[in-house]
Amino acid sequence: MSAGHDHSHHHHHDHAPKLDHLNAAFIWGIILNSAFVIIEVIAGLSTHSLSLLTDAGHNLSDVASLALALLAFKLTKVNSTSQYTYGYKRSTIIVSFFNAVILFVAVGFIIYEAIMRFMHTEVVAGGTMAWVALIGIGINAFTAWLFVKDKDTDLNVKGAYLHMAVDAIVSLGVVISGIIIYFTNLYWIDSVVSLIIAIVILKGTWSLLKDSLRLEMDGVPKEMDLEKIKAELLKCKGIIAVHHMHVWALSTTENALTAHLVVDPEHMPNFDAIKKDLRHRLEHMSISHATFEPEFSDDECKQLNCD
Image (cartoon, rainbow, N blue to C red):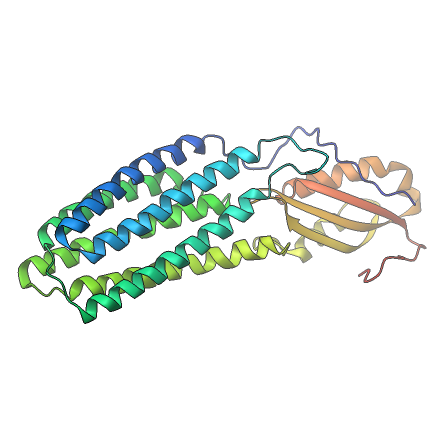
């Protein structure tokens, strides 16, 4: 039986998220956060504030993350080739995983420096530290706002939003510690805030790492329910059973499916219409690429592990 490998997608409905408008959001985020990193480094060195310097390092990792995410989005527009038949869509998954790794490295550095500072306390200019961090709240909150509307449509956008939202909270912590230091001269507060920053970043990064690693390993995307997908396919007239079904991510916004379909022999002549109906159903479930292999109800699947 010949497989129904028809990848034409001339539909009236396209349910894949259109994220072209986010180019400007990424560019604004990169510019604003790059400028703030420079401000934080200068202020951190002049005030001997570990909180500012570690936050500057974290913000620098955010700039790298935003730049990588923007590059990945650009690569998804590149046409497929004979070597890369899906184009470079998967680069978005690689980038989301790499961003999580960058954050973990940044956290390791923060924890190390904080422990060193506990052992060798330094005088910190709390007032300057608080004012600089206050600027950070504004920049990070504004950048997070740029991504808030689309954060649930793409893993890299979610990552960018999380980075910026966490940074705004982190900056608030630095403001509070700066005020406390200014009035009490309790300089060890600077190291405590750095450790709290590290814990907050770790918490936000863990889910990003798990989700991106799952996609990297061709796991079923988190939002996908295989039983619901199978039930939707079985609603199509002429489909008796669905087995050997696989769902995976082509990118952080596009998902693919392959499945064996047991078709009622009476409906086999209408298989093109069945495929069209099935693809339309799947597009409403965020699956934009589907390949089906039809079988007669009295056929026995010859594929290994066919279930």
